[in-house]
Amino acid sequence: MVKLKRIIIDIDGVLADYNGGMAQVIMELYNIEVPSNGKDITDWYQYRNTIGRNLWKDVWKFVNDNPSFMCNLNPLASPYEFSRIESLNLNNDLYFVTNRASIGIKIITEKWLMKHNISYPTVILSKHKGLIAAGLEADFIIEDSPKNIISIYRDSPKTKIYLMSYPYNKEVEYLATKCVNSIGEFLDDINKVKS
Image 1 (tube, rainbow, N blue to C red):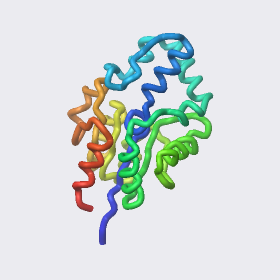
Image 2 (cartoon, helix red, strand yellow):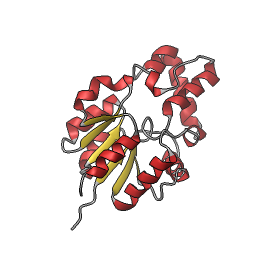
Image 3 (cartoon, one colour):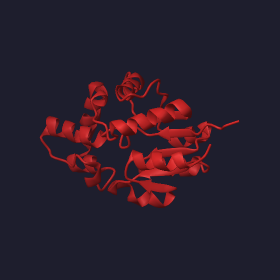
């Protein structure tokens, strides 16, 4: 019997250009320019520290009150990479686990994935990614958040952790099975592993 791979893919910072979207909101609301490319962000809290905690709360309120924000994020993956993800989706147990939080966000996230040709995506909303990985007995996960990498490393030691490399997550590189610069690198690697 062939064992299906259990794979978790994070959305924001891995598939969706969350940083670019947030930079655009900050510019529109406050006319403050912040880095829009994740490769230019050196600290996980750089946006909050740049604009201040009070304005940051307003940005979050705007994002949570405007579902179109998440609907309209640009993809970080190419159409070819999305087609490879769809192949994984059809032939393995694939989960999209995200810490997004606003009304209707699960459906919005599913629609965003379907817009990029992922059929019937399984979306799980949780800030406890390590516990989710452990509960699913995940074989692989790709993630960019330093806090989530620590949680996965602690709570799901059998899961192979792939870190989407950014300057803001360098301090957790040592916890990752492998650091990658694209979803394509992650897909290449896990496709080498036999079920």
